[in-house]
Image (cartoon, rainbow, N blue to C red):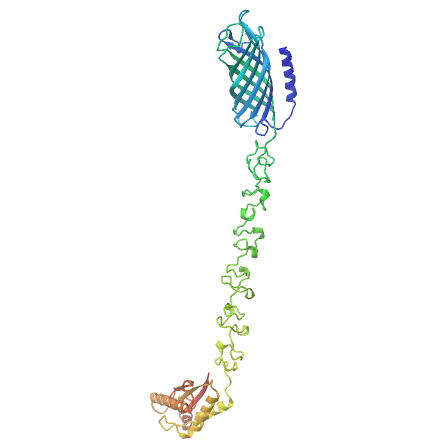
Length: 487
């Protein structure tokens, strides 16, 4: 009977070896069913030691196991066997029982690799033994402590040939034909096959089972490699599926693309990749924040106006301050930003007569009339003084009256009165005399209601002759008073 059972076990073992499954017993396939055949051996001080005693009769059994993966180190196993257990010392001292065993054990694996071929292990736990004496049908039921060791050889990733030996320790006898003893032990040699099954676990849903996943908590949707870790070809710490530049190392702020200047705009989209800028100008800077990028801003450090290429215009005349000759006064673009109060086309800052229209030739002042020139020409020889004195002769009054009239008619005029002498006499005295004569003319005109602050008397003595002092006629010409209009 036992031999026929072993034959069935061998056939079953061959069938299972032909099955091809995906993985070994791991977190992916945590369950394992084992099918075994084996030999039961007895040891007790009353009858003797049958462990590894091949002269004893063969007592065989069949067994099943169901184990559950806990982690890389531990499995828990439920085991059951049924067969015969016995020992023959002599005709009077022997026993034979039908044996039903069930154990719950914790198994410790010495090799922690899921893909290991050979996995040795030890185990221990708690079990039950039900022994029914074949000769008298006496039943012994007892608790035992099973301990043992074993070895798995993985033929395929999911099928293992398994051997393990289990010794059951109890403090009772097994009910043989002699008095019971407390040191009876049972050794079971198990040889068979284990088949692993169960749904693969993939906690992060990345397509890599947890047993092979080195990064088991990657976010859902992340593209991963064979190891379950995110693909990051450029090694910048940003997963390829989130990396806009997967082949070039970049930064998270630019979605994985390089951003040398750190402005949040990728270099490929940055018109100024070496200078920190703003998105408005495709990564180019606007230092003064005036809405004109620096590359187009003629005044990049001072806020200005777009219409003036980023330059300011304090006086609001449409001329940028850096081009405005009069930046604090509103003026005309045609005059470089300066005003022209009298509208004569000459900027006030260059116009000697800014409130009276004049000519460019006369620096913005009006041309001196022919009448004025004629009067001033007559004055050169028509103004006479008493000899050696600063007293004006009455014959000079008509000319001076004409000068006063001109000054009243032209309120913008300022009159320069220059006194001159010939070279006769002391130079210093001549200069003093010429100064006094110029002042005498001023007083006369002042008496004619010409404001003194409009006249500037100055004596030059003999310094500026207009004729030869060697002749009487020449000296007469040099003794003169000249009038010049200024503004």
